[in-house]
Length: 174
Image (cartoon, rainbow, N blue to C red; front, side, top):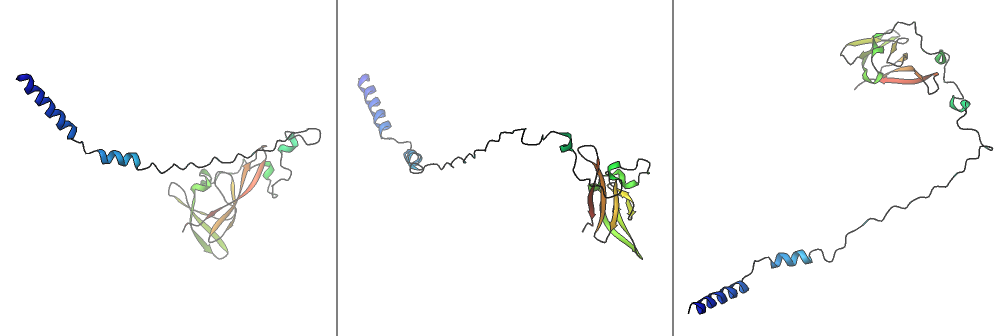
């Protein structure tokens, strides 16, 4: 009788398991069918542009590494002795300790025809400058002071070692 009882219990459990569900059938169907009709978009590869090859024939063209090709054809000196370099004997002014981009123009002062620019250094000190004075680390000579900006000519060393003049300016902060 015990085997008959165990068999009945086993069959009952088997029927209960077969009738039961884990309620995930809807989720499985969604996962299977959600993106089945969509294909991923893949951007086409960019077109590779072929470069035209160039054969350098030195008999027809100038040598690109010749010494005369390294020096500028026209000197940028404006008659102030830029090619000779800055004056080594000139006493350095206080605003020449700072790079030009670290200085701030905060105002102007006028007396008659004389104009001064009020310049603030990075350490917070305020300086008054006029035409003919120097500022910036590139030997900047002040050429003009207006209400809006200070114009300078800086001396920088070019790639071949010669000194070249470069225009620069410092504008008023608003």
